Image 1 (cartoon, rainbow, N blue to C red):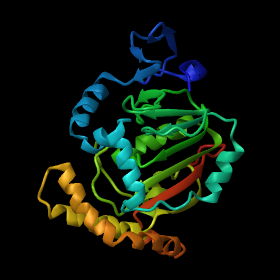
Image 2: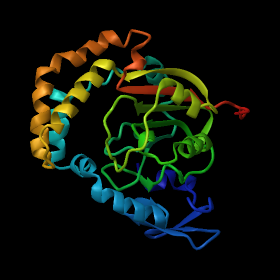
Image 3: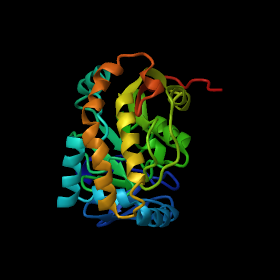
Image 4: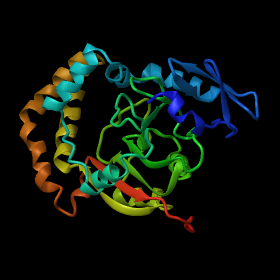
Length: 295
């Protein structure tokens, strides 16, 4: 999506003032805050966020490998689909139907990485990966109140130091009766993209999204996937190596031996207790017309 399409909805992430554009820079009309535009992508990060990101990115090995659109990253993605430790369940039909019903509405993808699924989707991430439209923090979403009808964030909350603030920001930029879809890990290993801070149960998800009307909570990556992933992680530790290639070879052994097991999730997710041992969970919420009283 081109900057010109959504530029009018942008606001300063520091003082929330309106932004004006001058060639390759966005200026806040209320202050002296300014932000560069690089290759058509506004870089709406605070100075301290830029410094923190630079430090974190130096240690985010997996992000460097997989978010670069080159032969190596594409090969990794293909191998993950073929012999990966986890199997993502089909997206809930409720989510599919809602997203289809608002095909002509502006939507936001937080933590998009290299994914782009709709011409009306604005991709927001903390660095300028492929197909990112806005570089910004999920803690200071640089859009006006009630801009979006649909918001999606997949495997993002666990990487946020202050997840409640991110949820509050989603609430702010979402329109009343708008929808947010979120996926989070439960039984998963530590993974730094660029850091990793928490895990969630179904009750934890309901609590953090308590300002919203909760429509549906469920399993997106099942117990069998949790089992195979932990087995692969455990076997990788036996390598005692810091070499990524060697570690991947060690992981490959249990992944090949246990390959059929993850497909048991098609059956196990039908068990009402599947969330107790799930690898990943999801929640679908709607913003109410009026703010709730939250205790």
